[in-house]
Image (cartoon, rainbow, N blue to C red; front, side, top):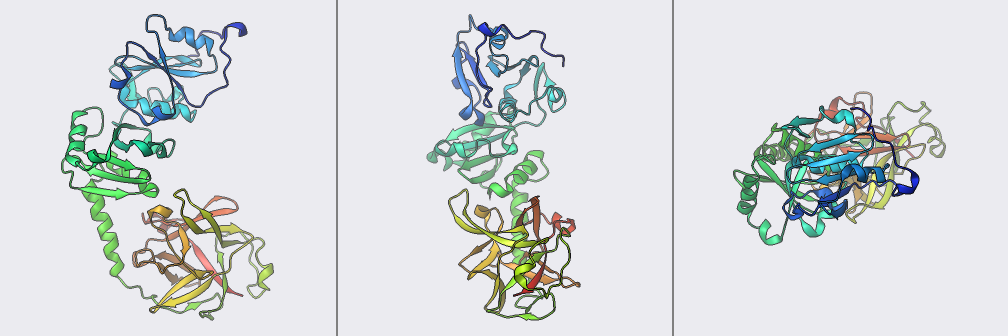
Amino acid sequence: MAMHRDTPPPAAERIEEPPLRAPTLFVPDNVDFTKVQKCLEDRRTNLVTVDSATFNGELELRKRPYQRFLVLEKDHFTLFNHFHPPVKFSYKSRNAVMSHLWRDALYANKFGTEFKEVDGLLQLEPLPVLYFVFGREADTLVSNYAIDDNTIMEYYELTMAMDPAMLAKAVQEKAGLCVSHFYVVNRGKKYRAIDTNDPSISYAFGPSTKTRTISRLASGSITVQGLIDEEQAQISNEARESPSSGSVLRDINGEEVAEGEQFLLQVQSGRGDDRDPEEEWRNIFEGKDWLHVYNHTNYLGLDEALIHGKADYGAIFGVAVVDGVTYLTFEGQFLQIGSEDYGRNVIALPDVPSKYNRIQIDYNSDGDVVLSRWGTGAPIICSWVKYAYGAVFADDSMEAVYSKELLKLRMIKI
């Protein structure tokens, strides 16, 4: 689109404001905002009521040359921005437009591509997903995930949540405004996808699988029942005992690592130089990658010892055998795969892990140690998000089996 033809007014006529990330939303007094479809982004938008008889978006833009704002109309809303002419959007995509503006990611090249024109108004091609959000905890959703962009929302109270049929009816009443085959009920960091046609069918999930779960449901590639079946099949695999269960741990020289002994875990990432494993252990860190431990409090307020990859320095680990099963340990705590609350990261906790969260230890033919979720084959990977830090977690999608990020370790006794 062409540049906006108007030039900024003289400085004396301008409203000098610092650029805002949150867009301003002008609501003319002839628009009943209570009847406008609710959006998550409303909670961090500058809402301004104006006189419909005197307000003029073009004139307002001249006063605010470095701002961008939205003006609500009865059947659409308009985006004003100094870098392109006013653009009209469907209310179906209001949350998406506002979240794009917040991230400074709404560019003219998206008009007609990502946002399609339908009946003279731009909108995202897929219909939005309807969220029912517990009002007192709605702020936990703001700015969390891009998957939240294409949504509409309604608040609920606990009594309403106890009646899924009532929620399903609310979805049906919004026919044409949102996807119709499922909806999401949210409270804080907990989510539940519910089948609109049969509200007794629901699937619980957390933040770490939110994007994948909602995108698959919204695209129609899987149903709520399909997600339940997948999870049950995965859990049933716990019964498969591994050939290495209770096996003896061995270091890179093939020597047994017994309880009470300590060792380092070197990450085989190909980023460091090779050194003699017999070298005195305090001097072998430099130029290599290691597993280390970061003690902190996560976003749910839970204390955790987070296992991660670190360049040039590693933590000291141990081994424990409980009921014939061998576990890696750190300072007397058991390494395990965290639940949804821990984002499926590998962590150290005081309690012996459940079978589902247990880490299986296997060996490659070259002696490298590989880790996976017990009995499922779902690998543990190390994703280097920056040079000195690698996130270590279980990838239950199984795609990491073919990834270069598959975690390979060497045990070096000290």
